[in-house]
Amino acid sequence: MPELPDVEHHRRLVAERAAGRRVLGVRVGDPALLEGTTPAGLGRSLTGRTLAAPRRHGKWLLLVTADGADGPTLVVHFRMSGELVVDEDGAAPGDAAVTLLLEGAALAYRTRRRLGGISYLRAGVDPATVTGPLGPDALGLDRSTLAARLEGRRGGLKSALLNQRVVAGLGNELVDEILWRARTAPDQAVGDLTHAQLRAVHREMGVVLRQSVRAGRVPSGPTWLNGQRSQPHPRCPHCDALLERSRVAGRTTVWCPHEQSGRA
DNA sequence: TCGCTTGTTGATGG
DNA sequence: GCCATCAACAAGCG
Image 1 (cartoon, rainbow, N blue to C red):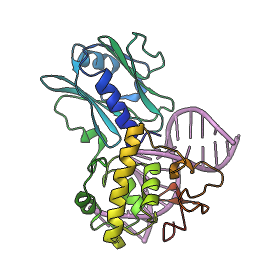
Image 2: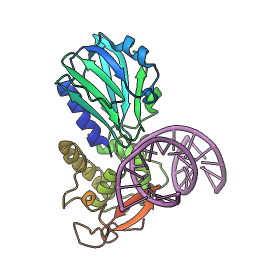
Image 3: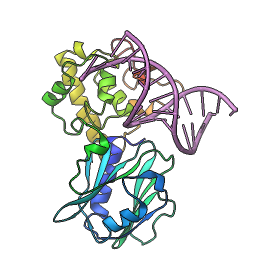
């Protein structure tokens, strides 16, 4: 399930192996996943341009073309199952929804479950027209900004952190991991957060994101809550208590009733 | 066959 | 406007 770390992994992949190459053509295998243009229009717009350094905001990836100034941009969302593949052997995957044929490589977007997709943005158009309003990126977020984003909100903490308008990039697994490490209940009211809790949430957000980005995904080792969530009887890696599974903010939520005070 | 899962949008109601 | 809840979407999985 692509969350921020998976998208960041794809950003680095494109930066290292596809950026700087010229677009020779495009191939659209699934036109339904292409928004904002037609397959032919995409080819006309991109052919001859150079792929610039990709950018990421939350779970969105921007594939910017450039020749001096920013040119047309592809806005990519992975949703549940999307991935980018760079092939430098000249053999692009045949089952890709959209493939950019580059000088010396092919950059292919695949998605098994056909959610997500690629939106075409003309040069100079704000990506927010596609992504909607997004909060600041969760990676590298400083504490005062987090506090400001939560200020005045009613409702639960997990719900707020999942809201991409509040903070961009966190998904279900990351939020459960962060709250467990910060020893804060998922349904903790945002308005009642103590300074100590906010500090802990911010600190653990940084720890979890840095380690996840390094791994290219949310790790699932024995010291991670994420490693327990699919077990039939998951136990807390800290205290060995049986973990609770319930629904918070409409999402399956795994948490430790012993360490995370409050209820979910 | 049914139900659950994911992220996001959009409808509905408080 | 803010927030919760629910349905919808796709498709794999049990």
